[in-house]
Image (cartoon, rainbow, N blue to C red):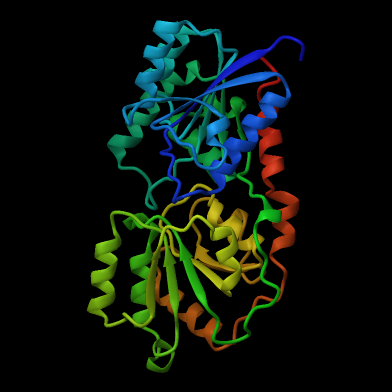
Amino acid sequence: MKNKKKIAILCNYILLPERVGGMDHFFWKFDATCKANNIQVDWFFPNRAQHGEYSSLTIFDSNHQSVESFFLDFCVQNRPDYTHVVTHFVELCTPFFKRLKLLSEAKVIAIDHNPRPIKGYPLKKKIEKKVKGFLYSKYIDELIGVSNYTVEEIINDFGFQLRSKTKTIYNGVISKDIKARSNRALNRPTFLVASHLRESKGIQDLIVAVQYLPLEIKNEIKIDIYGDGPYKNQLIEKIKKYQLEDCFSFKGNQSNLNEIFSQYDYMLQPTHMECFSLSILESLAANVPVITTNVGGNEEAVVDGSNGYVFKAKDTIALTAILEEVFLGKKKIHANTRIAIEDKFSLEKMVNEHFALLLNK
């Protein structure tokens, strides 16, 4: 490419040095790939950051205000000549996209990372989304889902007219940066949870499931919880209610989860809603099987009995049964779970597929 392109990327994603995950690595790698191909990237985040490789990015921060409104004001004041505008973690099919098209001739690409409720949206919300799809989807040139599940939900939410311009690009991880477990315990395994602590992550179901375990297992099982969030106090109270303080340990946010996964035998993710989980990919890349629910794109990465176990969301009895059989060695995952991640869900593949979106105006 001889003529230098200039693109804008809007991300409703707060940059936190204590929470460095797969998306951070994607942003850094994508920026470097663009620069290597003579493409300038202006990044719009809620805040600025210097950790990792953020110091090398050109960041305009909205000071924790709406990134969309900030960007529209930026366009009015500066009239930047962008060829592409890409959005991450931004609500789809809103008036923002119409206003953007009035200010810019850029190709607009919306990446959908947003999970859906386990029982779907209420009827009123469904109707609102259909109306928004009719009014505003025409102002988005391409919509990208991070799983096949997400793509189908975009179409269900906003209308079948979007099918022709919607595609899947899976999230990916850097396997070589994730320490792999060489072997795992055949019985009495260790468990971790790596999650933002909010109600939709279903950790309260895990607590109930442990409560149902036989006493001899409850006396031994250890589950470390990595992450933080607004639901932490409720989880602590539930653990106290069932007198399970010896079973659970809160470890807070850790920036080196890529090394921590390999210290455990299984990861637990009892989530109620998910698009496509990077923590699942990271765990599998560490050769740590995953016990998770059948929501979102989870089953596009976890195959029951092959690289983990899948149960119906909120089914605490089923989760108890899995925990008991895994703990006693009656259920075992023997496969190296890292191999499939390296082949199908690499960060390099993710970056290349996102970069390909920029090659056509």
